[in-house]
Image (cartoon, rainbow, N blue to C red; front, side, top):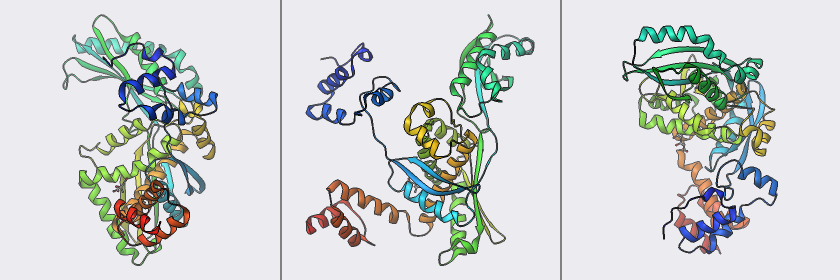
Length: 422
Ligand code: MEV
């Protein structure tokens, strides 16, 4: 039987589930049950989630946790995080508390501009194209008037529009390169609508528009988060040694791409968790962050460290295109709640909070890696996960956790210990 289906999206949810169970599972008795188990009993709420995408069958849970004690520019935040990786929230909480007694995080928004481009082909004389662009530039901006009206009122809109010659890299290829300020909205729809209006006003017999789209490379939408303290205040047995090893770990991530990718992945553990919790687009943030990490032609650490004059300083520069109005931020009840928890931040403030979460995560990872090793903390959470899978009760959990203190946790060893005490 052919498994290609037409008109799938028009079928009812139940019909879609039945079709899936019948056609793509060998034993399908569990399929409907599992899918329905995750339906929300509140039909209105379920409908809201169903409508986010096409062909929704059910919901996929991710844990929503919080990391308290984030002191950022002298304000204390409880930071919402959506993430499945077991050690991330624990690490963020520990590090937030640690820095809260050492001055907290200092953050600065370094820029808020975003870019969109109309990509087009033109085979004629460049001078004619330049003249056509110059003569029509005002008209092109005016073509977006109905779209930019509200954004203009909020102090945003189109900041710059220029013609870029890319023919040296690709024959006949030019761009209209447009700079935007989108205030508290992430701005993807706004930017794309403006670009399409500009493209329509620009096209003529000689100009072939290829596409009009925002860029997720946003080096102009940049935030810095920083922590610093006297080296002596870092604590531990030998704070000077700790600072030196930590500094070297960051230097390694500056020059070694294999390490830099993992280093930055650790930063994104914190960043993505808050981006997701606040209903923002984590794919856009990921793409932009990694492109920024490669901006000098080699992939490098997004964070930096200095130890000079007895001061330890550790900071992160990261491009973040975020919104606190519009999109999912207004629709998803949990995203709304997250933003309320963060005291309804502006997009700039959210950039600062997200960057602080990223820096905290990076600090936690480097502190663990350069001291006890990463597995120490991971193993504790790993053990809890295995115990949950095995259905251990509180008493059994306590006994087995004590037993494994300082020992290597393997699935087999935990199962064997569990069976022994059962
Ligand atoms: C794991 O999710 C993240 C780390 O690998 C980051 C790092 O190595 O810096 C621990």
